[in-house]
Image (cartoon, rainbow, N blue to C red; front, side, top):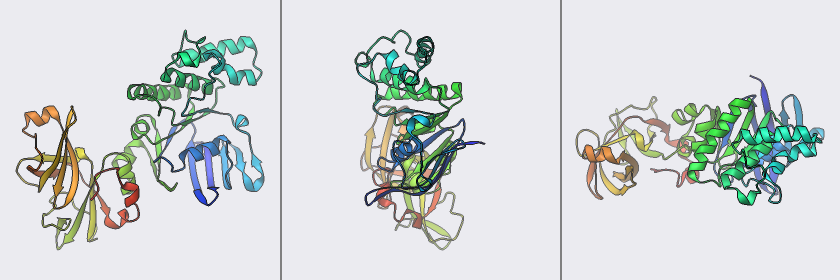
Length: 372
């Protein structure tokens, strides 16, 4: 496929703080590409470099066939000459302008005639579901409506590339869900390329054709489809960042694999090589909990009623893991546990990581899941 964004060897520093160091990335024309990573990892910096609001210290950025940034070659296209639309996290709508004036402002700067401006403005306002609100001021709009105004303003110039910087962060949960599907539908309908920056895994999984996972030092860990990223993570960081993750230490003893420093044997899928130290990774949904039968013996350290689900923190030989059971299933199948009650744990699925792969990223993983 044709590349619409090509990033080659980008270096960006702020004083002694290195944000990006030789970053390479390519986005295909017509796809919804999401850059996903924790706050402060350099996602927005990269987006601003693509947009032209900042310059890299080294490296090249091309949009289509045109190199728009190359410090070594003295190339730096201004943002308005790069043919892109951009939507910011804080909407960035002008409070003194009506919806219509906000949306059509790029056409006014371009010297478009009043008749064309009227036609395209009303068409674009209707496209984002704002019919009848063209005369309102931003102060008369909800947060979701203001974000639609920002989206319409970015779309009105019919760009081939849209850059979206955490555009749904300030919306409530229901509006976020509604808007993410609207953005995906607009992308398909208009056949534009979307480069979307977020730390929200659900949004990334819902709208993306491909996802790039960036860690907290600006390194890209994995690029792939939402399914590949979620089901075949490249390493423990990616696995943990994509949702609640459990990591269970496992040591090889002869032909057996024992949990942590205990004597309980893992009787499920085994690692594929002869390393002695492993970590089994799994989601709460991969865990089956019972009062008896075959499995690992554990103790409920915390039982939490969360409405639709029961959430359990389980201790197995000094290692903690989390699992959840839908409340109606827990009631029907006698899976309602109390604190300090014994239980038996088995697994539907395990991913195996060499224990060495967790070294050096423990700090990055803190608070993102139940760690060994």
